[in-house]
Image (cartoon, rainbow, N blue to C red; front, top):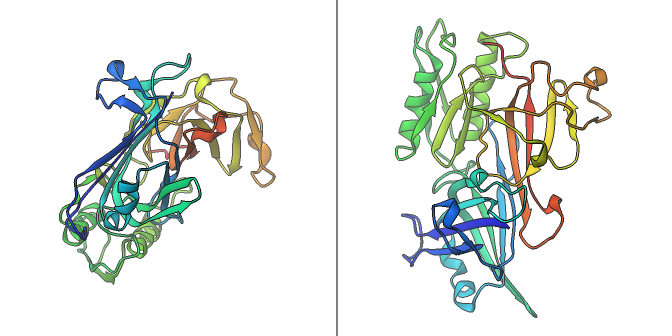
Length: 328
């Protein structure tokens, strides 16, 4: 069965404090996969959630919960600026379902919540972001100072710790990102800051396959990456793939997979040999019969799209854009 768990809890920015509420597809929300019991009467959930790097264009996440009670509908205004945690995947039951692939895809903030009651249609609608208590476009003081001879990673960590003192920062960048003179800039949001970081790093490391220093966020906090660090390698089963893999750009493949929450940006994934593959018109078709030059891809973007009640496989999936990994 399709699995979801959505928990909404008050934050320091909430208008009022309220009792946390959880919407789930389970009768018992056990952390042990083997003990979970599906709820056949679970509410219908529609979602469209992105995981991407801040210098890449992406929309806010969208979530709709259908069939909520009047009490939940009446609470909608109080959910603005609240914390939201969403886990998705599959629970045990169907032959190829793998509950071990379920996981949390976002721990962020509700930017806006509004209710809808029209005839028999009653739902809550959420606009959400992966950042805790803040939108990527909010005015934040990013004072960036990069001293000559020090690494870019160290300078970024200092800026993020000042701007977002409560959000952990992990990951790493190439130690070759060192500048020969002091750099000092001011930015007012993390999107413009991340674009500058990516552009500046490519001016230092000029190899063709270098992805550039990037800032992203997931349920653990901010992460720094430029594709040079060792990351987890996950094997994709043939039964996890929906439709064909598609070459969408130079050395870039898009794959639609069964909904899963165990993938993160910059994870390395391996597709099985013999996977069906097609070409988009502008993908430079020399890659026609190859799913990878070395068998491994690295995830650049993730999009989770789902309707928990729609029967076809396309309605509960995770879409990944991935590229040939950087050569260290």
